[in-house]
Length: 264
Image (cartoon, rainbow, N blue to C red):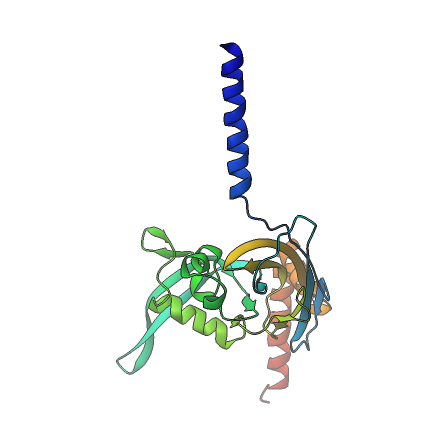
């Protein structure tokens, strides 16, 4: 009886292992990625630039062949901060703010690049779950007493994305990723003149047959150099001294202006 029970438990365990193995996808790819420069310096005359992301898809002997080619989606997000979008209306001949919406810890820079349109890469459900496209990226907002994202065609959300897009800070390009070979790829990351200072995270997702295969991450940093960086560092680390110097400079400017434009 004991031997029969032990044999039954062993067969059940083997059956569970077999079922688990059968349910596991036969993909064993991994991504090797890097950017052309991990530290971008911004000077007072900085007018924008571009980084290059490049990488490859590596397979091992466990990778099963599949029909079709790979798809790649690159998401670049800059430093996060709270932002406000305001609605203006013309009343009594002047434009005034009538309503506003606060966006909480949203990226200052957001770009999504792929090798083809998102609806050709994955289903709508996968697009929402993996946040493929600006319409599917979560932008946390304060809506009255609640917090959360809203539908993509919400007026405040649409206006926020549109304004950021007009400044080149939010962008979406579905033909920006180029496969140089079936496994080698590259894409450019445009950096406008108004690019925020801080750390940028880059997430690369590999898809095959409409499913996420694997993903990888890298990062780069944008920093100020020169007098602007000195002023920013002083204001952050020595606020009291910075305030005194600023007040003194304002007084000196006013005194000099009074001498130059004094009427005798």
